[in-house]
Image (cartoon, rainbow, N blue to C red):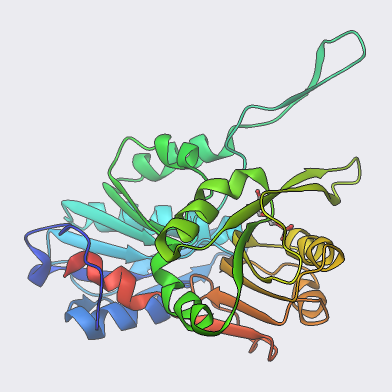
Length: 320
Ligand code: R5P
């Protein structure tokens, strides 16, 4: 049963066709099953130099096209695939292209940063990746974006097309409701960037929240310097974050919570990027259970500490 409905994306939903990207096949199938849209076949290969070679193999007859693609590893290929699929659909006659991108890459670099030398002059510059990615998506002809738990409001503001950013509160609501029955809970954001997310969970479930001060040291290692908010001593802690990549943030946060007397620690993280040996390190960490959505799918099954929460009903409800 769907408990939440979002506004209707299009009035022509019956006529939609779905194009799955390599990282969107499962979700595309699920949406097709739920909503009855036709799935189109594609052929996605590489030329010998590594460039992508993409073909849509069925006729594009609908004016409204859905492309489903998560832009996780291999990130650059999957992102480029999204753009090329959109271009191909447009050239095949599609009039409106909605991209369902459960995990949107490059959204973390959403601020202009530069490093200064001792004289105060900037000596290294970084791109505004989240902004560039938004412009590339728009240029490819995508006219609407449906995504989940974007890294920040800023990453969303860079778009000039409508963006539906599904909240993680809905994805993880049943998990938190189950814990509320039996535990003395507190919601934790492992950094100040996640305060809004943690606050949303806290308000929805009427649970206290605290946040941590995090920074990266010279070796890009995450350091947590402070916990701000009510005491976590004797509490059952739920860490909330958008992305788990190397696992450094969540693992460090759990260590600090434990030092401050936390009784138990679980984590709900929307996007399991899980690069390097993150999976093993998280499995060996102080976290008892690790809930992640299937915004990113992994070839190999995740170890027993991980519990996968499906996003398909929330995404399909956008078209209800
Ligand atoms: C950072 O601002 C994000 O919200 C996540 O906390 C971060 O991307 C997690 O990365 P990692 O798992 O590598 O620490």
